[in-house]
Length: 117
Ligand code: 5GP
Ligand code: ZN
Image (tube, rainbow, N blue to C red; front, side, top):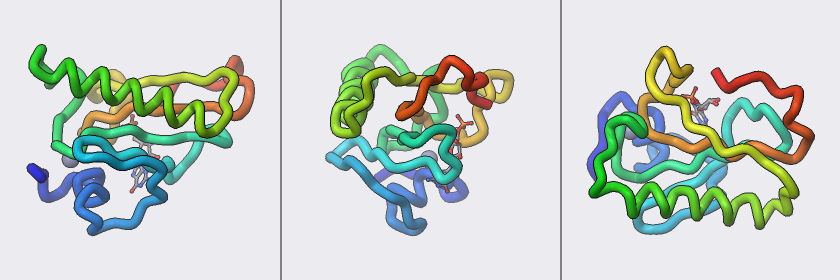
């Protein structure tokens, strides 16, 4: 799998760092966020290193759809009645880990939850 040596999520993909994995297939991994903002906080990532949504191309649209599909499945498996799917893009977008990821957050009312950052 293509990887960037200092990328924490690539290390998780390559099993060099532990993670609480909730879903895995050939191109996607989902695992629990180390600092959850809610009872359910899962990160859904492509195994291939892509910096952010902004670094994707139309040829990645199948992958982007698949990432959303995994987010939907994670929510279903956790019986979430309402939840949020978000992705931060770039420093000004609050992105800290520069490997594309969807946050799937739920398990409590989110109306009082501040923006991800
Ligand atoms: P961002 O701000 O880039 O959208 O979100 C990065 C997320 O990755 C944060 O919610 C942070 O808690 C999570 N995170 C950072 N490092 C690790 C790690 O080593 N393991 C896990 N499971 N989550 C991490
Ligand atoms: Zn990476």
